Image (tube, rainbow, N blue to C red; front, side):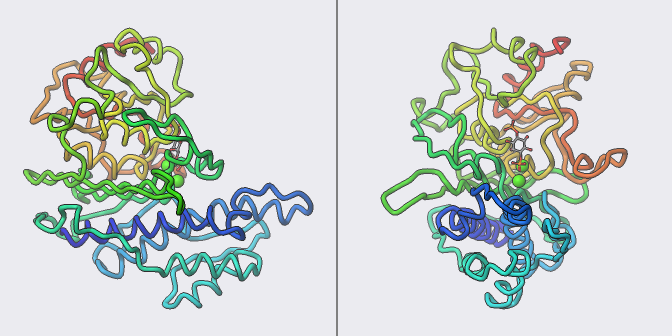
Length: 389
Ligand code: 2IP
Ligand code: CA
Ligand code: CA
């Protein structure tokens, strides 16, 4: 299944291109950011377009994966639905058509006849992603998986608010970006339909750094399937110490700035100075743990969903870490062990909805979560949080 990984890397790059085009091309950018004044109808369209970028990206990924792996088409899910209702009460099923022209015509119907915007968007959707995969090390990979056993979760753009706001922050080596375009990510995760275990993940960061020609992205991938573990990111023990914030005195923890005060206070004593950190984007916070910019990401609320965590979770597992349900770990009797680096209890799974919940909450990570690379550190964090909130 190295072919699937290569395909996911390509479609994620295409998604990143669409995300960049929407900010770069004036007619699309205007739709994305301008709060138009005037008639209500226009205001509605601005709101609609924000969702349309997400819907289009997700559909494009679904289309391309389904074309190459038809066994998977009914098991590709994501944050968005392809039924797009614009503020005028019109409802259109957004699909990627056979030709660029047809896709443009369809998109024009949701964009109130704006041909320029529709044409630009369709061009990006039908463009081949020029991602050179020769340096990714995916060529020699043998992944013992079969497409009919797999499902996919997609978050077309995570941290949408940062994407729309579009602040350009300069990244500092070895430090995370608390907010800004860097926090916006394309997330694709593959899991086993039978057990819900995440086995493959791709993260594309469309806005990694800016050079004189514009924004450049970066991609990350990981596979964790039985004894096959491979990742584009170095394992913690192989990293040069100066590139990571983790490993110094005290722990480093990344959280949402909206995290409960009680959780912040409980974790502060474990952390070194300035090592209780905040960043936007659930996917970005997990990426910070993957890259060693933080030891753990702690979230006490059920405010993330399967599409936020599946892809990045596979990378954590490929590096010997994982992601657990916080509530489950807090309520367990304390007899859990680290087996081969992974926590043996409470790992998040991706195949079962919460049938008692409605809407998006069906697929929420309801008990909160902790993302980690080192199981001993996870246990310290859980121990510290027990009984505190
Ligand atoms: C959001 C996004 C938010 C995050 C929230 C996610 O996804 O990642 O940033 O909140 O949990 O569901 P926070 O930044 O406070 O961690 P989306 O942008 O796709 O809605
Ligand atoms: Ca999200
Ligand atoms: Ca999203």
